[in-house]
Length: 243
Image: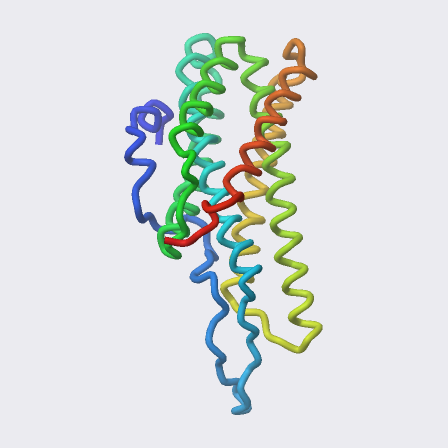
């Protein structure tokens, strides 16, 4: 898929209500599965999620979907400007855009499947992400790459925290003698794949002169602070409610 074709897609095509999961294995359900029967005939012990655990998973999928939409819009805004002066970046920008688009479609499908209310701040996120992509591209090639460096530094840490929390849940269940449902195991695997691709983007940005942006410390510091605020806000208050 060429970057020009990607960038021509209208925003409404990104916000489809239901899309297939693009990463396998992919989570099938948030709740633990019903108890199954082992080959010996004795029922396996599967522990149901607590309300707190359900709230965590709802919040995680909501903020992940919003974040991946922002990433898609940042690259969509940056690419036309960058490619005019740096046509050799076409393949790299298309690669990163396609991966972010895949991440977004994965989480978009999951929040629809589980009837999780998206963040109410979608319009604001869309404007801010597009503005960030456009403004950093206008500042130059190095600034655009510094934007990717800053965003992916925060997002990589964010996914690591989610994975760590899920693994703590798994460890506790196993210590209590419960079997871990396939759905939770698959979600951890999916998050690891997406996290690794985000960190790959970070490596690409550093390799393409992100740290030569001036002033690097200020630009990345402001963007990272904005990312932390964007990650925090969709987890708050009534937006955690399911439809």
